[in-house]
Length: 468
Ligand SMILES: NC(=O)c1ccc[n+]([C@@H]2O[C@H](COP(=O)([O-])OP(=O)(O)OC[C@H]3O[C@@H](n4cnc5c(N)ncnc54)[C@H](O)[C@@H]3O)[C@@H](O)[C@H]2O)c1
Image (tube, rainbow, N blue to C red; front, side, top):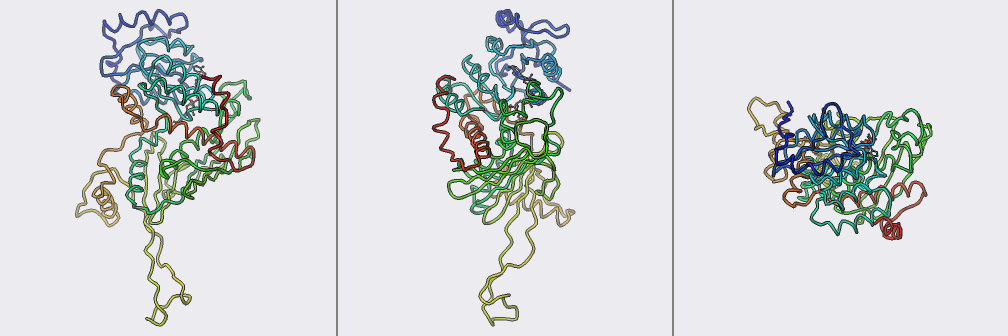
């Protein structure tokens, strides 16, 4: 059951908010019988507004219900239907639904803003939010255009005390954090390659009426969207950057509109290869004609990553965040057979002087979050799984916390940072690096050439001044 008590303002809070509510009333839309009252928080709870309560905004509001240290006091969307959905999802008894995000910025009781508008609007809303003195959580991909990369970096220098976090929730997953720690401790050796995919069937479909004039189709048109690269690959390029410990040096790729010939201008399939400075590679695929995921014993569909090192591999997926939660498996490299010197025994190498490996591939060990101890009643597989977990715990690689949805964790962490001045894991530079990767990957596919990541330094520089 939803605890609605956190939504109730105190008398003092109401007095405090009255002026701001009055100022915003001209553009505020009131729903149902609810009067235009902004709910205000006590000391430890951050008052926030959600700008854009479409698919993602509403999903976040559902999760925000469970987050104790933040309280939604306003929702803003240009569509009444979306605002209503947001309000209903958060089960706000009384709230102001805004149509114009600039009015939200004028509301002094809004301490933090969650930006979940389409990508092409991220920069302008994030800028307005920072300039209004709000802590800001912006969905990925942080910015859309090269000039916005430079402009946001410059702008944020003026607001160092405001938290700016990006919605890259894998950074807040225990499984992904565990993988990163395993790499740091050398458990999978030198990490040389990552394969990642996000395969869907059918992927995005054109909404009626078709075409870019229908705002519901924003994802399908290049003027508003970075396509599969921005919407899906961005999460996984960020994972690769994190696991490899750097941004790529260059990217090559092939994209096409090869199946969904419905007038869209973004690719319906993309294949990308990133070269990192130490020679590591990320090999990436996103298609919209099949959803099979060969990783994790094919127990999950669509998306995941395989991190490959000289001593082992890790399979990861974040899951759908609803039914299927994040999970991971660890595969150690099979033991190599010793090369028998010629004539040393009965079992000789297949070819003189050649080394050869015996045996099947290693069985994957789940990266478990459960704390069960091995009991005499456990079967062989169960024991093996639990020993693996204990070993990782002994190494200090895993933490014995319960698994939680990384979206809940990222939001709670955001409000906590707003209160304490803490620094987000998915911060400005993580977000900008991710956006740069999206921009340059699309360029590589469009121009059919190798695009170097340092090209961004010269791209959009003059435009950045105008955006500031
Ligand atoms: N982190 C994740 O896993 C994740 C998942 C899905 C979407 N997203 C991101 O969230 C963002 C939104 O995606 P979505 O799926 O919710 O799209 P959507 O089209 O469902 O919702 C966007 C909403 O923004 C509203 N909007 C448009 N212009 C506005 C304006 N000027 N002021 C206020 N509201 C406005 C629209 O009316 C719509 O309701 C995108 O950047 C997307 O990449 C992130």
